[in-house]
Length: 403
Image 1 (cartoon, rainbow, N blue to C red):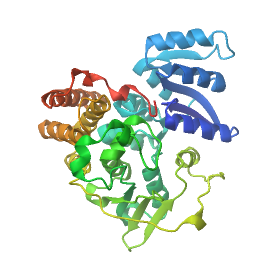
Image 2 (image 1 turned 60 degrees about the horizontal axis):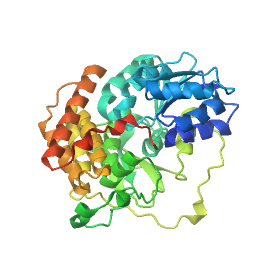
Image 3 (image 1 turned 120 degrees about the horizontal axis):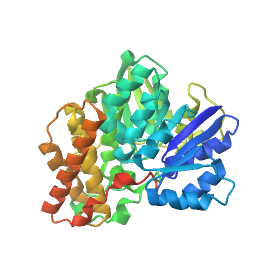
């Protein structure tokens, strides 16, 4: 029986994880949940799973949930809150596997503390690896525990890597759908609406990650994450546009062999893989191979989608640059979703912040968070220069994936 903690239980990854747990009750037990600000979903999850503890975003939310649970059969569930509550969820002594699915750096401290506590991590929060991947991977190595990727692309790479040793890898190919604007002329980007940008052609995801997919920043974050997870330089991690999203990633070996992983576009499958690794267990998620007809591939247009170029630059520079990349993107995406800046201005904000950020060296989580805060303020200042509203201070990272 694997005992699970979920950071981001009410978001899309969290809900998919609980769906997997429900399908395999003999294999998994839910120990602790971090549910963010979704009170109704947290209430239902507390009643259904009866975790030892459940954490809410704020003290007020925790008090409301505590009151609602008093008259139910889940009255013994301890309700906690805030960043300290997330850390308690991630480091609960009974949990041995932690699913990290809180969007943004809001999940960073809890994820890092889970690694320090010797937990195995199922990683769906790429921002943690972008901002503090060097610290997290170093600690995981010290603990002798794996970091198991849940993002479909890195999960696919992890599966393909089982076909050879890391020193035999020539390059990784991360596939990208190209997003909803793959065929849209760049001249029209200034008029793209929030509704259009949220209409992803393949995946149903949370708002921030959907916008990041539309700008290809999400793929840029995946490049940085792949460099950290698989200990490869940026030049060995390539992005290729594959609109069908059939192949999730490929690994090319030094002898010219290429292994590709494809499956249904259902996040339950990579979650199941991570939860049961190194086993493979039977599931009903079947790809209709006989329906496979046509696969397209093309290089990404980095002039049209400069966020991907900026991510490669940050990956090469290291230090505070990836921290600033993620922070500036969060603020810029929040500003776009709030109607404060245009779609085409998102990369402008990010590039300005990156240019003003010295590389530095991230020696601790505290230093990472300080660099993150500085980059957020720089992004807000840049948005003000572009004529954006003061409302852009609302942090996207306070939410959970899918909320």
